[in-house]
Length: 551
Image 1 (cartoon, rainbow, N blue to C red):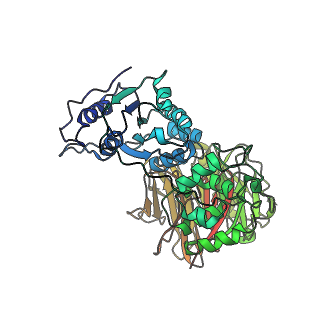
Image 2: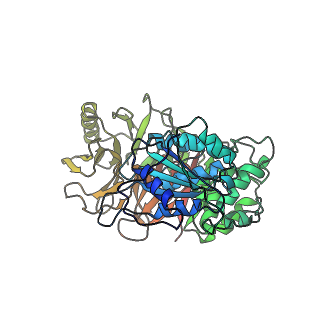
Image 3: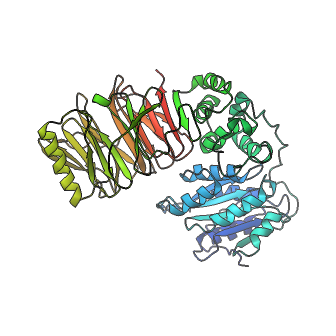
C-alpha cells in the first residue's frame, strides 16, 4: 500500500505541534501527480487527525508564489448522512446534485476549469451517521479526475478498513497517544420535531437531513437516498415536509435565515401535502424577499404538473398571459400565467429537442432546435411581408451557421453562436458583437424605450448591448459558473433580467438600477423567464415555480 512522502518544496511552516511529519506527508501527496487520489489519515483518538486536516485546509503557498492551487474543501462528516454530505460537497464545488450518484456524475462531466479541481478534506468518518454509505461515496469520488480526497478516521473504523481493502490509497498514520489536539466531541443535539415547519426551518439543516434519511422516514418508504418520492406525500410521516426537503435539500442546507429556508421549503411543497403546512410556511417566509405565486411539481394533480422543463417563454400580443413550456421531447405546452392551468399545446412539427423559444409580438413563435436551425410557428394574425422576409433570411443563415441561442422583438431576431458572438438581424441590417469567450448559451431582447439585447455565456458573464452601439464594457453579472438560461422583459417595474447558472443559482437583475434578488430552488435549473407582470418563472426537471418580488 503506497505511503505519502514529504515534499521537497515544502517551505517549513509548521502545523500544530506533534503532526509535522503527517503534514509533510500530506503536502508530498498533494504535489505527487502519480500518488493515489485517496489519502487516509488515521490514528488513535487525540492524535491530531482533525486538527491536521483543518491546518491543511488553511495552508497556503509559500510567500511570493502566485500559482493558483486547487481549492481545499473541508467537510465534517460527524453526524452526516451520505445524502447530506453529497449536498454539502456539491454546494462547495459549484455543482448541483440531488443524490450521491448525481454528485459523482456532475463532477465527472462538468467543465474542469483551472479553479475547478479540488481537494476534499473529510473529517470524522468514524462519527458519521452512515459511514458505510459514505465509504462507497468516497470510493466513487476518488475515480473522478478533478477530485482528490483526504479522509480522516480512527484506526478501528470499519468503513476505513473497507476503504483500505481493494483500493490504491495513500496512508498517513499519526499513531499518537491521547492529547489535546483533536476537538472534544460535542454531545448529541436534540432532534427537532420533523413535522413542525417552524422547528425544521430553524434547526441545523444537516441534522434535519440526517434525521429524515436515517431515522424518521417510516419503514418501507422508498427514496431515502435517491431524492423525493414521486407521490404519496402525506405517507412520508411528516405531512409532506420530508418529501419537500428531499426535493430542495441542497438549497435548504445552505447557511440562510429561517425565513429564506421557509420560502424554499414552501416552493418545494407538493399539492398532496398537509393543507395546514402551506399557510404556516407562508407566514414563516414573510421576511423573505420573494412571494410564491404558485408551484407545480411531479405528481401534482390540481392542476397537473406540466412535465419536465427544458425551455420557457412568456408570450405577449395575442398570447398575453400565456406561458410556453417546452420539454425534452419537443412538446411545447401552453399554460395560464395566473395559475399554471393548461391552455393547450403549441401546434408545431419540429423534430427533436428544442433549445430556445422566442415568442414574437404578433403571436408567431420562433423555435431553435438542437441542431441550431430556426423554425417558425405562425400565430392567428397575419404577419407583415417584411417580417416574413426577415425570418426567412435568418433561417437561411442558420442553415449554414447554426445558432446556440435565440430571441425576438418587434422588428429583430437575435441569435447567439458557439464562438461567443451575438447577431441582431433587423430591418435596417445586421449588427454584431463579440460579447463572450466561448459559446453563447442564452439571449434576450427587450423592446423598451431604449431597446437592448442581453446575452449569457458559458464564460459565466451576462452582458448588455444595444445593436448599433458598442457593448456595455462591464458585465451585468459575472460568476464562476456557466449561464444556462436567461430571459428579459419590460415590466411595470422597468426592464428585468432573469439569469440561471449551472450551480443552481437564479438571480433577478434591474439594468436601470436597484437591488438584485436571488433564489435557489435546489435541483438544477433548466430555464427561467420573466413575465410581463414582472413575475419570475423557474423550471427544473420536476418543478415549475412562479415567484413575485416583494415591493
